[in-house]
Length: 233
Image (cartoon, rainbow, N blue to C red; front, top):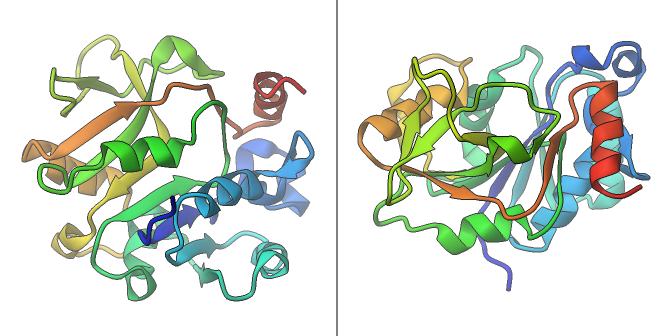
């Protein structure tokens, strides 16, 4: 069953960690297991929502535009950023298309296995108690991730930042549902979604849900190898 919730795909990063590969190919168009990264994400989104999907662009934007237009001229909306706005700023700039309700957000450099990450989010989403719902994975199942973790969750699933703790059990894996009305409280044009989440965490209205499958962040050439291993190719 598809929903009408709009979506935002963040595809504007410069991909500097990809080295020479990212100099001529925008990271969303890098191939993993025979399919571009952005197509891995868009195929999953197309399966769960019939709402508008905004894709932001910056580095080698003409290549991304050509690729997206070949998929569907009418389904997707391109939001070009001459200057990078980061995730929060990119979402804010896209509000004329996305509207003022909740939005599915996703990075374009991620590989998931197992259940649809977006179905998992939509099944758990409860706008009566939530302003944000973030997709998480246990730190020991985060392929290629060497960090100390991002969040704790209380028994009801509310998010707590790692803060000064040595480690936290959950890693945010680049997909969420978020209400957009509180973006108006942030005057800057360029900012991370973390600033919006922190407003919601402070009010006890940011939650997490655990992904039952696998995840790999494809930010480097080594990430491509790890993602293809996760996919069994």
